[in-house]
Image: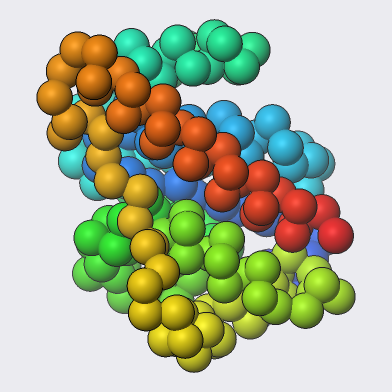
Length: 196
């Protein structure tokens, strides 16, 4: 049976699992998440894309993000793009950086709301679920259980704020590095869960 577009409840386990990563400008947090996930997940099983809610198409990575990619040995060539209806409908899992971007996706395409999580949210909720679940079952179950799981942790921080909004210069670079380290930790958790 062919997997329906954006439908994690279908029998498409043999197809590529489509992951869409979203931030605002698609030049910092979502590209870093994209590169980190792509480095950890098997290409034969996953297709990873990223976009921005207010991206200026064609923009390169901001300098701290480019430096991070170079340091990690990732491709630092980048061209920002905007979220498209096709990419949202195609995705089995949509990962945003903040709840604001998660709400944006839900308003943009209401049918995608149930499979849209912040990065921290999905890493936490999925880690609370049985280890016997396949990746698609993990996404499905996380969408059903997130309210119950998250409500039991009222102090859980779900957002990864935009470091570009910090002051420029050295402090801004340090904020970016902390942000990228946080993204790397969350991605490591998700990649381990998907590889079980």
